[in-house]
Image 1 (cartoon, rainbow, N blue to C red):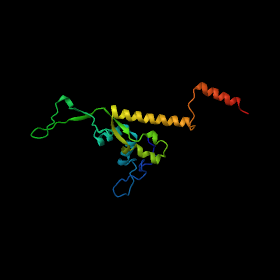
Image 2 (cartoon, one colour):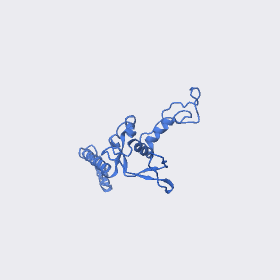
Image 3 (cartoon, helix red, strand yellow):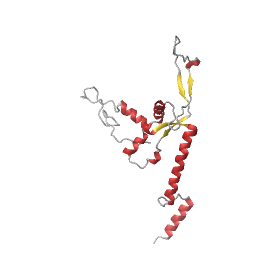
Image 4 (spheres, rainbow, N blue to C red):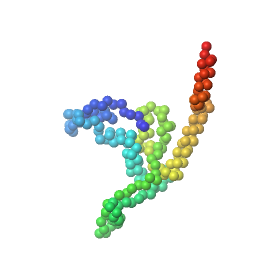
Length: 187
């Protein structure tokens, strides 16, 4: 989850950017009934709602995987069971066709969030934006990239444990035995 904003909820001022929301275009009176600018609300939704992120990434990438360049297949579905007329030229009219993208793609963080978790909020927030998101094929690309990231993360964890930077996790019995040993060795 991205870092949350810390602005004060005050009527007439945007909760995201903390600037006033004007009632008219002349900047004379603050609109006390609103608490978001439309653009700020869109940015907030892009940061906090995965469904909005997925739609925005798919619309931007048009279903093309950023790793291999393949396009996810589409299913064309016409409402009410009619056959869609796809010919545009000539005298034929185009009927309404709903394009439904298949679930054969994933939204992927190009730079994994665990790599930037140590950064302060002001620097970390850019990794939640659309620039760091991309469409990836589910089977070959997303699974391969995830496996590589998990292997890298496990390797770093092993280095941290073996290097003495972090103590290995102990079982409950081992924790009790260590606590008992410390208690016995107390002066």
